[in-house]
Structure formats: structure tokens, C-alpha cells
Length: 192
Image (cartoon, rainbow, N blue to C red; front, side, top):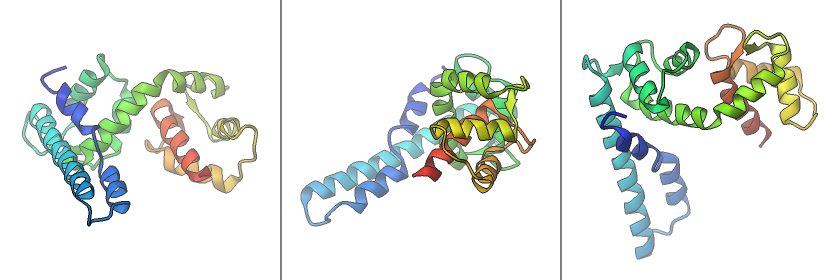
């Protein structure tokens, strides 16, 4: 890592979702609640500071966006090795056309961190369900994968279309390994 491992770790400390969960269940009259709110606010401010530090470190041309090469540098440092083209394309496509903004950075780092933690499982799942040996899942192969995730349950065409549409971030009609995590997330959120 460059001098940013602390900044990357800080981005994962707390999220606005955590802040909303804390504030939703708090009675504003107690001193304990006040301290919980202050702690949550501090975590959100800390995360914002960490995003700014990452942008200062990796936005070398000071455009306010991480362009492709700058994103590759960040992902390489996170991955401790060069990310694949599909991984870079996926993270880049989650952002605006100019590149990854400071606002997008938190989601990009969180997604890539989760992806790296689950990469072995995703690789195994892709190998198991990619019966056409293309390195990606077709619509039919994705249907089999979703049935597997549902312990053999039924997957309707509407459900499959929804998961495929949400997961095919690269918009090439296939689900590549980085998109498989998105498919997994969309499917499990749908089932809840």
C-alpha cells in the first residue's frame, strides 16, 4: 500500500446506514443516546476525511475523478496485485463517465473489498455453472446458479430477468465474475 491503508480501512468503519440504524432506535432524551449519535456522526466525518485522502493520493491529475489508470493504481494497491480488466471495467462502470468521484469512491472500495473477500467462492461458482466454458454465465447458466442458491427452488422468468438486468453492469449480455457478486446480492435481497 501507499500511505493510504488507514484511509481505506477508515472507509469501512461506519456507513450512513449505520448512522440511520443508530438514530432510528434512539431516544433523544438520554445522555447515552447523545453519545451514540456523536459517535455515529464522528464515524461519518472520519469516513469523509478518508475518502478525501484517497482522492488526494490517487487523483494524480487533480480532476476530481479517478480516471481508469488512477483506478487501476488504487485497485492494485487494494488487491496486492494487478486487477483483471473485467474487475476494473466493473468498478469503473459503477461510476459516472468521467471516472470515480469522491462520492462514488466509498461504494467502489466497499464493493471491491467484498469482492476480494469472496473471490475464491465466486471463482468456484463460476467454474461450476459456466458449462459453456466462456468465463462468464449466460442467462440460462445464471438461472441454474439462482436455482442452486435457492436450494433447487423455482426461478421465474421475471425474477431471472430482474437479476440479469441488475447484474449485467458491463451490459454485454453475460455475467462475468465481478458481476456474479452483484447477482448474488440482488438475488438474496430479493428473497428477503
